[in-house]
Length: 199
Figure 1 (tube, rainbow, N blue to C red):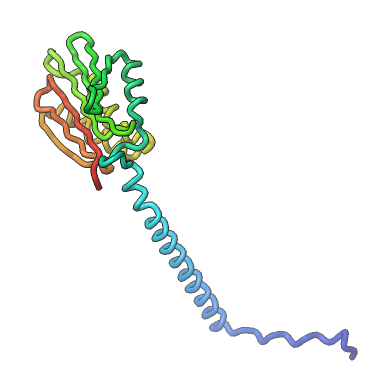
Figure 2 (figure 1 turned 30 degrees about the horizontal axis):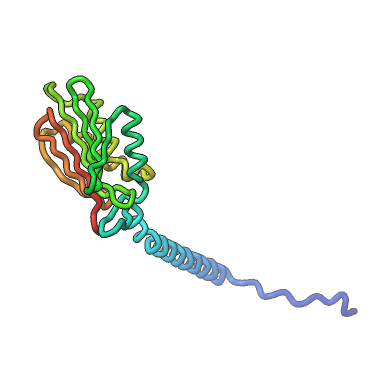
């Protein structure tokens, strides 16, 4: 017998019980690793995004909080493009935009600081028995403006506002760090006030 023909001895064959224990250990280790990855990933994601969601919809503008993604000039231009007459009130940083179509009067007042919006209110007044659906759409459009890039919050606002426009009651809510106040006791006059929260 030469050294080239010598094979190393084969390892002993494991018993059936040893194989089951090895697979059980392997499964437990895999489960433990998966749990650690899941918890660490979830906690890390939460820690990274919890502050972002609270602050991403508010920006500092002087001593106030403003809507960061909404320059006042873009809103004024959009309203003018729809036929509104807009004028800035000197000394108070407020824009007033008005439009009259038939017996329906639309009005928007927009508070501005450092080129950004910190509050706005919109109203629709009609001589009919109630404000038309197209006029209500004007209020819905304004309400969702701060969240134009967030369809989830925009949908939440729609879900809150749309049924209340015909409800005949005044109501308030906070969504995404913004305060919404709807005056809807009279169906001939609807008013929506929105302002940025401080927290």
